[in-house]
Length: 193
Image (cartoon, rainbow, N blue to C red):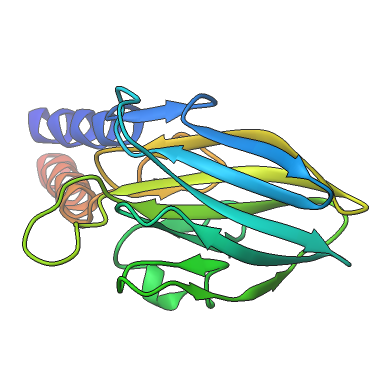
């Protein structure tokens, strides 16, 4: 029973805690006409940031350019998407991608409604390009090519589940939880028979 309680506590700690900031570390600015910028703080203490600049016409987002410091990649995603380094390769092309030191821009179709963009960035230079260890999302509303930001969240420790402030569970935490449940079931049913 103790193992079960420990596994449950570990899983809940992973889901409830850890470097996630909501509604304060991503900003949407309306620059002029149909041009906007999204800025994300790459550090939890708001000492480093990067931005992308884009326009919207006929419900199509088109990237214009980005700040080429550590850069950021922005993807159109669905609510409750697990967004971490292992899931990025499964996503469609991003709105803007800067991870290879060369900016690549794509067009993204959006509806006249709320939609989510997920962002991946980093803030530490090492050999080569900095690691992409910051994951976030922003919910935007499109009303006839006029964008407003609804909410956002950024994880500085691990991936994040889009539309929530929950981190993507680490695979080993889920495995430990399942093992704990199995052991508890075996002990429970072993004692009863």
